[in-house]
Image 1 (cartoon, rainbow, N blue to C red):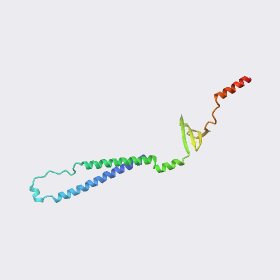
Image 2: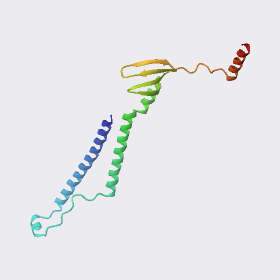
Image 3: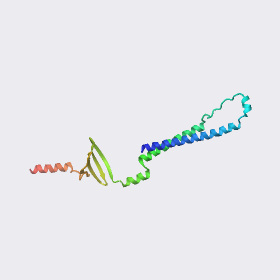
Length: 166
């Protein structure tokens, strides 16, 4: 998926530079036709001294640099958005899918050598699973504590009554 995002970004950069090259070629063609119209007749060109050659491409102006910077920022934003949507999906589908999921991995403990313990939650149940490269074993259910142990004072009173009777 990451390769796809980079390919899209590269295609966008190539498309922008290709259109800029075509635009430069079109303006060069217009300049060359203007030069032909202002050219001197052949007889006077032979007699006249050679003229200084004009640069074919002028130095980029601040407007051109700003436009190039804008395109670069646009391509970077498009690349980031395509990477984000490929990695995380569209937010509309993400919200819909998270409501439907009932199975969650709550905790994982690695034992080494590709073996680990999982605490898995399904609706209101919690299960302990053992995972090895060859199989997955159901170990036991994990329930909430049944009841809180009795008060220490009550246990002490019960123990003293039993000692007094003995």
